Image (cartoon, rainbow, N blue to C red; front, side, top):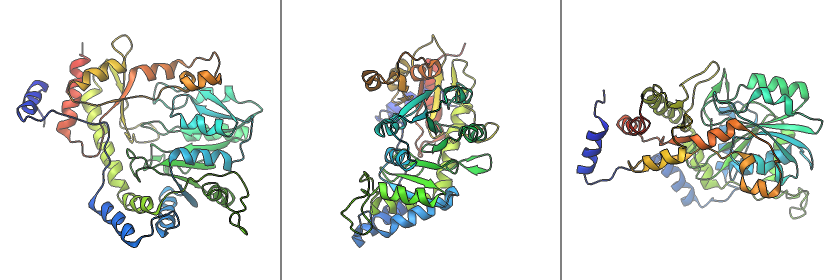
Length: 390
């Protein structure tokens, strides 16, 4: 039972002559991970043709519950490949969340298709399901469903709509690797699912990503697109416009090693999130999502909080927490407010109030794997002090 108050804890840290510092995230690399990479370096098989690539793909699709996987250089690369592999063409419309990483929109725009934005809900920050049908037109060909920060989307409801309108589904599971929606692993829904192995993910390869699917035809297309669409008979007579989006064998070796530890990583994330929730959920001035809902557990990929309006902005809270050595990061900035898209005049005169609110009042807290309960206590105490309970 931790009973130190904030002032005592701060004094203790100052006496140690070590200024407290809590980064937002930090990769968790074990000695086994290091040994795996060192072995590949010794073997000299470091390119994308190495055997670890295939092993990583096979282990990954078995873990997810798919038939095939294709390793690539990033989650963004996976999205771009997914859009083209599903034959999304110029002027086709693709529904995407407005509250998400910009990669969702870029993948659609680069294929000269049109992204159509859907606002998020304020309950779990995922796509607002009741707005999906309102935005479907004759030109709508697909939807990108991105699981944001904590909970997966309610896939049963979404897939029912997609089946009704014959929409292709790309499931962006970059942030929820390792948890289930009901009894099925996230990333096992839709036509293609994509993942990221960036440094702050449950499984990291530094940079890197994965596509997973059940269709052999789509699998073959994705493999070709990641590798410059080399010709089958004459390698250098290319049969389509592809990319060099390959993963290296070094990255795959790290991914293979990390994947063996996925259950521990997920449990650790949940443990961190639950303790934050315990310390913060009674503060009436913030929203923090609970450890579970009716169809899933909260993976707490990041531990996000939303400040109630008229108290202070996320930027202001971030500045105050920095004085305690606590780093934070703001929530995603909505697509309709992106500088580049305003210049391009893609989303004209549209309002998405929920996304705009979360962008201004939401931030996420340190949640790296080595964070201890005493650290979470310190961070939570600082937040409760700044956002005083009334």
